[in-house]
Length: 156
Image 1 (cartoon, rainbow, N blue to C red):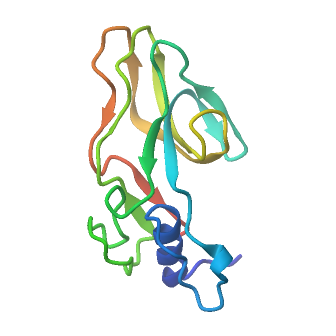
Image 2: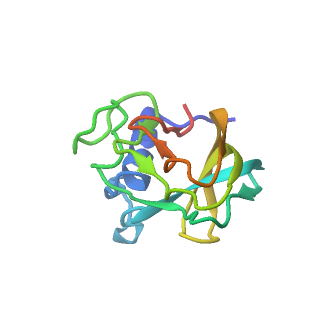
């Protein structure tokens, strides 16, 4: 088994979440930058690393689009700056609130979140359990996750 170096973890965080060029010696221009947007979703059943889970549907639900850039995600020093990552945590956090539409129907008991590469269907990229499950019903306030609520880690 091998582990990633802090250098590679920083480069991957900056490339994937923060829209920065990969910046690795020997990388071709085709390596470009990571995704333009990430799509946050709410789930009522857990996925696994191979996919699955049950995403909320109906009642005004939609995934939330978050641009992959230095405004929306911290560097690995956990600072919301344009500075490149140089920390040793392999971790980034959201630097903005992630707010879903207000429900116009019952969404059920939301227990997990996921990040996809498309606004509908697409590929599951990251997922995790919420600290506490939440029942979301018609007329409730729009579900929102505060700044730093999502902690996303590579390797470490």
